[in-house]
Image (tube, one colour):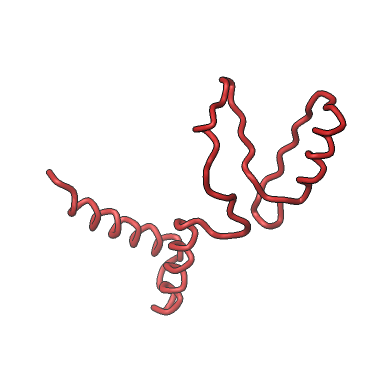
Length: 99
């Protein structure tokens, strides 16, 4: 979709009226959709609320590195700058690991 999200479509057998009403009340809301080949347990359901329109930490880091690339004169490509800096960050964290 235009905002980068994806749309999924699922069909469900006909529901009783009360369950159908509950489903329609949830229209246009954000939440978790769980799918599993195996039975789900309560532990499978995330405790935190679904984030609406917020960037992940990885997306935030990419955006910040892009701004840094712009501020440093746009040398090379933004993608090369991102990959180089991500590798540096990874190596810094690896140096902190116990042998």
